[in-house]
Length: 345
Image (cartoon, rainbow, N blue to C red):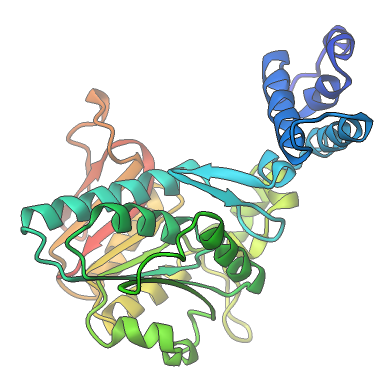
């Protein structure tokens, strides 16, 4: 990365000390001014519209944090995600554009299917494994609860191993006013380990698998140890939780395999008779491996790889597909392979 000229810092310092503090991470003047404006608006909102001496010092303090490489979402404490405004805290993975894109695409797909069937689906059950901030579970719930008028019952459960993630997801549900819905709908967040069978006895989970599960969705840890060390951004390695990105070894002497969560999730999909499975992946190669794992579990009605933007039709990305175990699997949308969509029944 090229060094920034001193003249750029001199120029920024004459406009605002905060802009100069942001330059090392923003790398250019317009980006630094944009982030400075966001930080100012954040502090001004917290100060009820007033910026006194204490408020200006708070701005500089946040600019220093950001200038040291801390993600803006942690500095400001929030991140927009679809129609939601989510709290972000250290120790919980930051919501990203790709889960937002495939969550909205999945919600649109479910709503279209409901409309085509004349609204015959009287209930919908969704399990979000490795829920983190609750972003996927909450966005699906928000999209479906507002528009799926024919649904008599909508049950969404998010699960995560980290207690701070479960706590934050519950706060996000309250923040976005998704816990005040009628008695016919519900959204819950549960702390548990998906590799343990004990969590299946939780009352909110039991409700999901008393009948076949409709949707199993997950953004699990899928980065290899080597990939985390060499391919992820420095700010991600330093500030975001490794537990949410790299799978832990399972059992004494076991090797870390970046696909281990998909093996378990597909086992759970079979056990809970999930109709649809949607999992984020780290790229096309991993997507092909996940489709191969799903094919080994039995015949599938449909298997697709969704790109970064699954709802965008790009002329350069049409008719893309890969062949897995002799089966042609289409790649939907534009960008890199980002998630695997599987229809089991």
